[in-house]
Length: 293
Figure 1 (cartoon, one colour):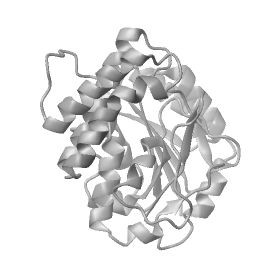
Figure 2: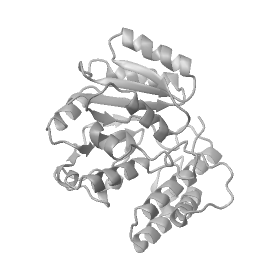
Figure 3: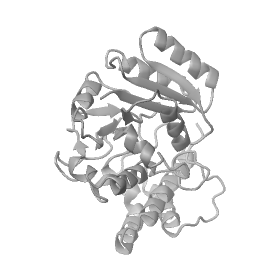
Figure 4: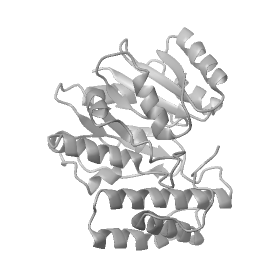
């Protein structure tokens, strides 16, 4: 099964260069990489052309803002044919050998979906269940976007990412687009639950944490926006009210459970965001977008 990596970027050229460098020697003949520029389009295209000349099968295209919109545009730009899709961030790096192990995990002709781990400078972002655990609406939250593996035919059948969700969307729901995608895929293909490929913990990509490089104001705006997205996903997918209430209240502990630069006060924007998402309305915040750079 060929691999197709779709990467949406605002035009962060140095991280993109590091990502493409990390892919050298890990891609095979049928694999493809698509860079979707939502800023600095000419420079992203030039970077893609440079690496294509060096043997990396990468092309560039452009789309309007929004990570979900960009990923959908990137999949549409792929050549015809099925493949297993991956959605790295533009600051993701693939350690040596990772794509080979991913390729082995998706080789079964019956493969529909799977997940692997993403690390930041502090360690694993989530802990995945053991191999063989059925995918369900509770453990689906342990797979974040850059760790999703999904067959293209399934992705297209369910309509791809919901462009009303995710970073840069024109709505307040600035995260959980990957969780929404997998829940809809599971609904369309219940057999994916038993066959979901949980890769071992030592198969991972590297990236940066949610708060990396942000000012205090930017960080708290992002946390609130992310809280809104997760609360929204819980609401539209009809999670039990008691679970939603506990999840919302737990937002207050976000600042206690996470290392600096996260502080105790950061729990409040996370709590407020989850509350907004849970009830489907926002309170007073004018800038809804999670990040602008």
